[in-house]
Length: 260
Image (cartoon, rainbow, N blue to C red):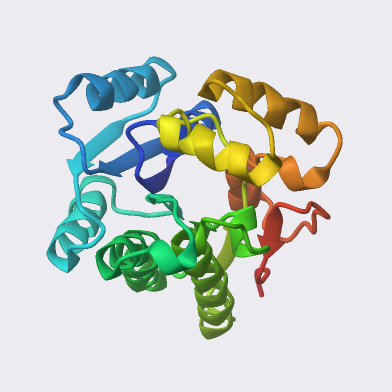
């Protein structure tokens, strides 16, 4: 039986890597796009992990802010596998600062990667999936795209925009066999959340005095048992890809359409 194929941006490490491993374990071949060099230690290590569970992997250095890079990425994926069953627009960055402290450059960087990069990913996903008459597009937003978060203005702006993009594209693709959804995780254990600036952000947000990122991870773990807002949503992508018509009542999942 022909294996399904998933393409994931920001796939070399962190949440993107976690998605890739889950898909591979469920029988998918994987296209990984990342800013890192595929021959580098981190990216190549992820590729080896995926291959160990039986996945064929195409690793591509790609910048989601470059239309040419994205065009080439999707061309390579299509030429290699001849199909694209699922695309996960995962690439993202964040920065911290009160709204009045931010510079134009800080705002533009997050918007370019998190929002416009997601649009660019969706654009090419839709083009290729329309050729085959089916597909699943999964945009990674955030609970910060559902609720405002102090000192995360740039990230909130972008992630709210991702939800709007998802709703629009879902309506545009009704009747095509292509389903578009959003996943809204909260804190996920990734290098992006293992920095001094992240610890400072959490301390400001909670009034705590955590000394390092490990302490914030324990805090989030405890909160996940108290409130669904802290649910990470990491495993939802595979579920959405295979069971898009199911309605799951989870705080961190935002479903925009179902197959028609």
